[in-house]
Image (cartoon, rainbow, N blue to C red; front, side, top):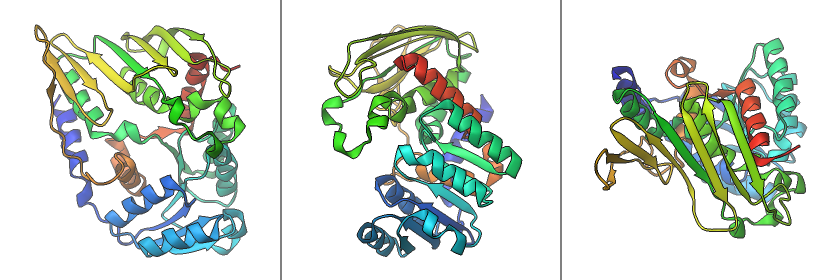
Length: 336
């Protein structure tokens, strides 16, 4: 248990790291790219090149953070750029795979691809083979696996002797999805594009299923695979789990871990609550993240990518594991 307590404390103090000498190529200029810009500035990194399609948007974001901005798309500039400590790919989901191929072909060695990295498991396996051949380190930015709430939960469950069971939900507010922002391909596989983030967080802790039963009901006009999802299984760590989601009802993402002495919930995922055995009262466990004003987990994963030794403490999701996650998502959401 002490090792998890030590890791949790390290995560809360990760902001003390400074990376003044590092250089970063950030591909994209949308909402996630801006979240990365905030994180890079928080570490004192000024040598950042921002590549994007839209000239006006690139200029606004680059000016805001004092970075160099180049418009016209990343392929236009790759041959003119030198080496970087880190490449971050923060493009629309349907463009992530091709960008990963291009960056590996150009010989870049340290790449963080926004989640889910691709929409098909075989694409991530293809990237994994390329990365191995090029001796490149590529990770997928599932930032929730470095949430302080998850690592505090890990400390608590280890103290109790481990997780005895788990239930999670990934209900989507589909009425709030701005459909015009997404391609038909992404909408058809929305389960992999968005709620897979919850699934990644849960199975990062309890292990991947060795046995699972999955059911889907209903449909949406833009997501014909279903609008209700429920199932259960047994993880490779022999932890029974179940899940549910109703995309046409109320609810939110959430996780509950059970131990022999308490129930622990992450609802919302950034927060942590405990209910002791024999009680019905949920008590909030106060967590002060390293970057309370930033998108949780983003600055943390940036630090891990810039300092490889940190990954001994906090392993990020690599391409093969990302492919495994996509395959699991295909089962849960009933994609063919």
